[in-house]
Image (cartoon, rainbow, N blue to C red):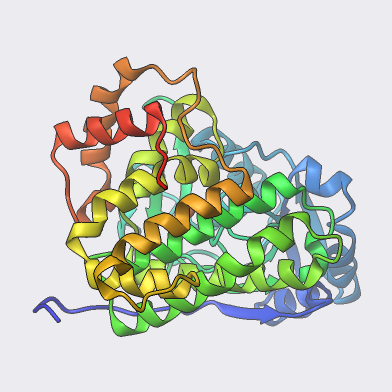
Amino acid sequence: MDSQTRDFYSPTHVVFGWGASARTGAEARRLGGRRVFVVTDQRVHSAGLTREPLKSLGDAGIEAVIFDDCEVDPSTATVERALERYLAEGCDVIVCIGGGSPICLARAVALRASNPTLSLRAMEGMNKFAAPPKPTVLVTTTTGSGSEVSPVFIITDPERMVKMNVGGHGAQATVSILDPAMLKSLPAGQVIATGMDAITHSLEAFLSNRASLITDALAIRSLEVLWKHIGPAAYSVNNMESRGQMLLASIVSVQASGSARLGLVHATSDQICAFHHVSHGMSNALMLPVVMEYNLPAAPDKFVELARATGEDVRHEADAPEAFLKAIARFYRRMGIPTRLPDVVDPASFDDWADRTLDNPLYTTTIRQPGKAEIVELYRRAKAGWSWP
Ligand SMILES: [Fe+2]
């Protein structure tokens, strides 16, 4: 153990189980809700997923003002528009029904509402806000975004083409309701994309230079569950048990990464996501193998644990760290995940992307820190396509 102090803080009240979304009204009421602001998006709303939570709000005698104008990767402008409506309608508690994008929007409105003089840009980074956010109740409709328990949320600043991380201690949601029944209509592609994000959270928390015994325990166990259940959750006809397991494990992975932080996969993948509109989870999946290969020499013992957690034979310790790379290769083949960056990605961008990676706060917590030329090389390798035996 090095001489740095560590934090572990995970204050969100998690409610989990079949039919848990019927608790939405009671939880909002307990937080003082009388007229709540419901953030969702049109896909979720039209799929009927808002029905049960809205009914429970009505049953609790709570009025609901619905805001469903949330795009994928919400921007600062959308936050300001939603905030205006929240204030004009005299709302109190903020309820979100949706996946990662509406959740980030709801949390941003909650933080802006309690910090009226600070713009999101002024609060970019960790612990830059003055007052904790308004109370929030989140009902998730995807597996894996992790924003349900994370200290940070992500909002796009379109002027700078930057996905801003905003948050810190005390910025977490108040209540997160995880109801596997809300995942019934989730398409397989989305299960894989959000599942790959969750797997990346487990791996990056485990390989962070801020990791601790507490975060390691959460990271390894969540990785085991995610690795085992992602395939059945996406493709099996009887997938609901696996989807429930993915939902819970994705939260556990973020309880690890919320305190240990993330690393180079997220720092490099943000550019793919911001410039080419590849989903956050798939952007991570595109960078994950080459970054893991790069990380290996810095943490061979931890790679043995990763190999063990993903079911590899680690009796021959000398080959065991590499066994995890082989596990990734087999896993990608089995899941049909692409092994090279999309054709539209122009290698001429890599110099700028490397600068942006170096500026990303997550660069500081990755276990092995590359120089600019090495980052360009990682992008080139991801573009050329990797393959391992
Ligand atoms: Fe992520």
